[in-house]
Image (tube, rainbow, N blue to C red):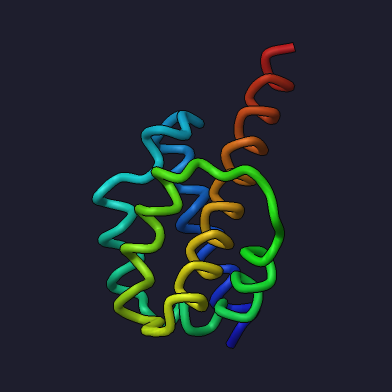
Length: 109
């Protein structure tokens, strides 16, 4: 289930980033949150990978982490788990945004 959850989560991320034109500030939209909130199994299935990514100590946009924390708090009641899953989700979003921007720049050349 974990790999399937990550694949679908990845597809949702790609679609959200593409709709936002690679603009990171526009990715955390209500539409994306609504899609994620109706697919609770994605968080449950991807929890081990999201926790692992969220453990890494690195600079993150705290506004985006707070947004992601709001999405996962209803699913993961344990605060530390919710925080790590939220940070992992932000890391995946940041990666998707960077990838989108790099690919767009490469196409322009």
